[in-house]
Length: 616
Image (cartoon, rainbow, N blue to C red; front, side, top):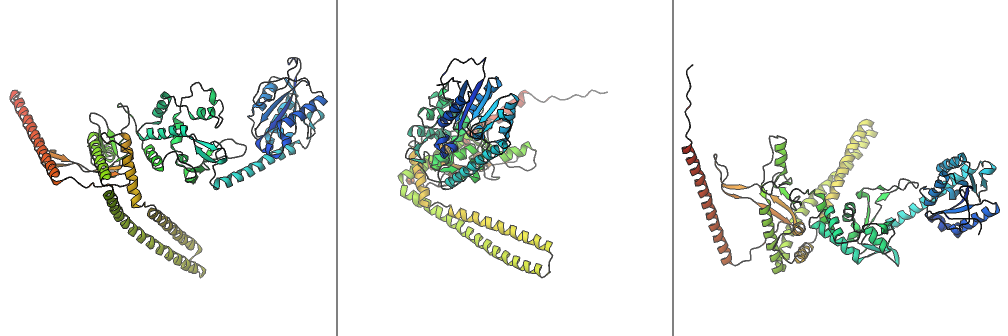
């Protein structure tokens, strides 16, 4: 082997190290580069063939000492190539006398950057040689060099167009475009376009979704996973050879999760078994920057692989993430936030935790803060009372479902049929009305066009009126599409009942109201304004305070549970309730007499003093 030695760099081929004194003699760098597209074209483009050709050229022309620096798998349109950066490092150290390439395309495929680097090397008196192109700066300038650089760039642009077209076709066929399956999946060794569930990672994904449903935030989930020594995705996948991430195995603490990682995982439809393509786009083949595409423009293919979480669980998590739940001095967010709505103004209720944990209407709070003359009423409701009510409703409904499953399905069918029938009748009537108006507008447009041709109306008037007709037609067509979609999205009655039955069977105990029970059972809660049995001008709050609360459960809405108890038990409960009400009334009367007695005694001990005015 001729005189050669090694420099440490990424993708650098080793050469034998002979006695070479770099301080006395400058180097010749033999640079090789290979991209994925070049590797497809021909085996002659391989790094080994380039290395052998350049080494033979250096030996024949006595370009010694020399080293090999290479970039294997890097495109010529990018310049952050490890081997190339090592070339520039040696150039800055003034250790280079000559750089040899196989041809100009190995240098790079960006004619502007190629020209800048050539001027830089010329200013440092560095000789450039492109063997196949016959370019040698020591023999003078080549007038065709700029054209060769442009042709090299055009080749890269053409390859980019072909690759982009192929990816577009593949993506629209429903095949995944991602080269790395998400955490929880692995690529099928027999079919690269198919994903298989990784059972170990999938269990972690399900746990993350379950923790979110339990009310845990992303930072808290990260802490829980870290304390339980759960490896983060990059380390886990690199350790098992599923994918390779740069320096993933060199992490000091492989159990440190990032909150952004949790947030991103919770928004991926792939975990429901769907394939999502065209999430982002690159502005140019020269750029590595990914520009995100709006979610509405994603191409989603449903049920293309095995799901890790159900669609219901995924939708519930998305609903929970839309509501901001802030922690306070209590240390955790209230799980009822985002579920309570005012019956009068329809706005959400705000949570207040000073003294008594309660909710009030946001319309009332905002109106008072802005000193508005008209605003909603408080709709005050304590958290303890709401939680007690929810637990009672969920317990009663679940008990009825488990004991009278057939009757429950029948009642859901009757209620849903009634709502579905009313909605269908209204929607179909409106769609028919809109269709008649669309046909009428077509006739008006034709008549308007005839008037324009006959000169009855001017061109400007025709344009103005026709534009109005087109806008109205577009609005009507949009409304019809929306109405038809609502008709098409009605679930079957049996499916609603089956989903709720499956939800009830998911929970085995109903003694305590947990956060996950609230999120999975409750759709929304409507709070009415409270009513007092007695209300006078001098004392408004008198008597018994009652408040109506409507609880809408998932799948079945505001379901009224039939009372299946025997008459004796119902009568005993009524008597007990009346007895309790009498005790409450006696307690209120006693407290009222006590306050009156205290006021009388205080007035007797402190009689009013007469004011004496002195004569002036």
